[in-house]
Every structure is written in C-alpha cells, then in structure tokens.
Image 1 (tube, rainbow, N blue to C red):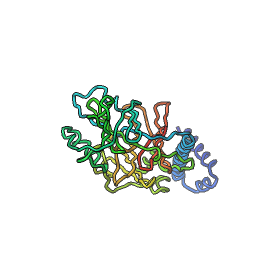
Image 2 (image 1 turned 90 degrees about the vertical axis):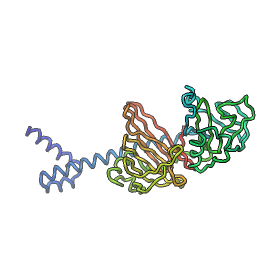
Image 3 (image 1 turned 180 degrees about the vertical axis):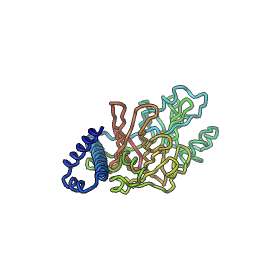
Image 4 (image 1 turned 120 degrees about the vertical axis):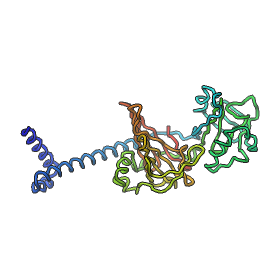
Length: 349
C-alpha cells in the first residue's frame, strides 16, 4: 500500500514538472499537503479548460459545415397548434390527416392542399356565423386575440367558390388572417402559421459561438461563470414575463423550477432561454415579441429523456442560427434552426 502511494506521488510530480517549469519551482517551496491540493486544482482547471475548448471546437466545426451547405429558401406553412371540438366523435385518423398538410396559397384565389387545387376568395364574415361553435369563443377567439388579432366580431376567411372542391374546411370557409390558416377535419382543428421566403436568411460562415446548453448548466450553478456569458452579457432574467400558451396568457418568473436567461437580441428580438429543471432537463428557446414569449413559437431541447437514452444539446450563434444535436446511442442528428426577420423560428432543410 505504501509503495503504491509513493509511486502515485512521484508520477503526479513528474506530470506537473513536465507541464510547467515555473509551476515546479513554486511547488517545491510549498508543503506537501498544499502541493497535493494545488496539483489537484490545476489538473481540474486544465481538464475543464480542455473540455470547454473541445466543446467550442465541435460546435464551430458543425457551424462551418452547415453554413457552407446549399439551402433552398421557400414560403412555408407550419403547424403550430390544434384543438379538439369533436369529443368522442373525433375521427381516428383526423389528427394524422391534418398534421402535415402541404399548403400553398397563390394570391387570395387559389389554395393548394396536398396538391389539390381549391378556388377561394378572401372576405370577412360576421362572427355570429360561429355562434353555435363552442370552440370559437372558448379557443379560437382568445388564441388570436392574445396575438393581436381580433376576430370576436368580424372573421377573415377564405370562402370556397365550389362545394365540390371542399377539403378540410368548416362550412366551406377557412379562417385566414394572412399569417394564420385554420383547417378542420373530423372533429379536429389545426392552426398553421405562414413564414415567408423573404423573411428567411442563410447562416453566416463568420458567425461566432454565442451560447450553449453546457454554458447554461454552469451559469445556473453560478451566474455568468462561463466565458460566453461574460462576453455577451448573458444573465438570469429576474423580471416578470408573459407567456402565450395556446389560448391563454401565463405569468412567468425565474423561480420554482424555471430559470430564464436573457441573450442579446437578433433582428431586434431579444432571445430568452428557459431551463426547466423542475421535472426534467428541458431547454426552450424563445424570441420576445410584443412584450411576450410564445410557446407556439419556440425551439425545445430535451437534455435528458426519462424513457430512453436519447440526449440533446444546443448551440446558438451570433447570426441567429440554432443547432440542436440529438444523440441516440452511436447515432447523432443535427437540426438547423434560424430566426426570421419577424422573429419566427424555422428549420433549414
């Protein structure tokens, strides 16, 4: 046992002596106990620095690879929320049918749904036409209302010109606000959001790494302890926040299992990251628009999964690019997200 201790002690001194001649001279002047403690702290610091260097290098290499790719920017309709108004009469395949509808609107007269052509005209109808629809007052009106669109009296719609072309409509009408389109089928309503090609942009090869999930884990333990937090003044936001969640507004603060970090703005939209450590390690990235965060406009990252070995991590770059890395055993996947000129998140493919 004593022989093992002596060998370990000699090996440790040899490693330190090789790493830094000046450190060796200073260590020779200290007591043995202090020396062991100093060596331990130095090795720990070196390990942490190497880990941080490796992580930064990995994310920077990922950005270099994906920023150099060719992407085709296009107008996009993305599903953001749904509601069930059919109760027990909801058709079994209704959700599956509406979840990923291919949508294209040409002007205000031609609507393509899954490549099926539908002739429409844009108009407004009185909200009384929906008075027998309980979901209109309880869900749709407040959903749009908290996002600044008032449909409580007059409802903007796309009116079908022929009942023979009907697909996914409600009474031969689609509620359409310009940014949102509502489709109905089998007791389920789905809201799609429009993100225009002109509001999108490509990653910049010269963008810098701004913040990562690993940074946030450390900064939660000790605020602004990471280099990125110090460089970009990323800190815990302790004020009150409004969270739009489907059809309601929820007050949010950085407490009770939720930690909010505020990042520099992109395109004049402040970026917030919520770390939910109450039940699981979940990060959600938001943009602040109209003084509110929106659950229907966010990027969610599950650092751990209670039901599988899947793990996720993220990195944000200064050009508004957000990478999410998903690890599943030996397999990994990179998802590339960006922020539009209007503060919407979209995925590059």
